[in-house]
Length: 171
Image 1 (cartoon, rainbow, N blue to C red):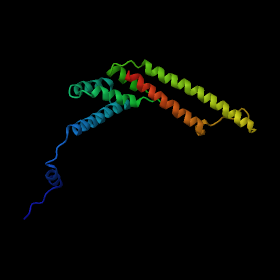
Image 2 (spheres, rainbow, N blue to C red):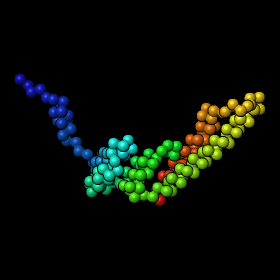
Image 3 (cartoon, helix red, strand yellow):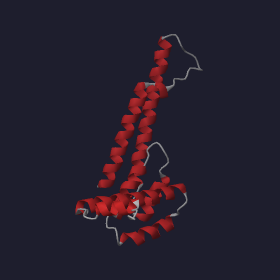
Image 4 (cartoon, rainbow, N blue to C red):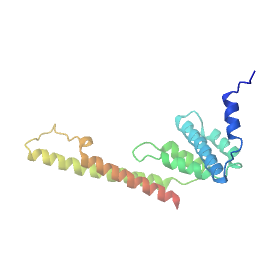
């Protein structure tokens, strides 16, 4: 009777002559490294991995992976959120990559100051517009989160801030 082949046997038989090019190997290695770094950073942010243990993991991998530090920096920069709390990300940059985060903190502070100023300007304009329509009083509070202009301004300021952060680190 004929032998019944497993799915794995069939796959191995069909792919036995195929090999990966150097570019494909590099791309696969880069994706694997990116996934590993992303996992480490997420665990550290979640608090399931402390900075000391993360340093140990990186020391073990650093010899095998020359692109580890740039991949880690890229992942950390992707996690910097001008609107959120990036303190843990900054701690990782300082502790593991030995990067000074003061310029990044200043950029975020500048973004938040500019955002507050724009918010006050648009709120004052909205109150003025409502008052011209006969709506006024101490209880009138404009809802800027529904204002398309405010949403656009906020997105533009945030995008510009993120670009500044990335270019500041690239130097």
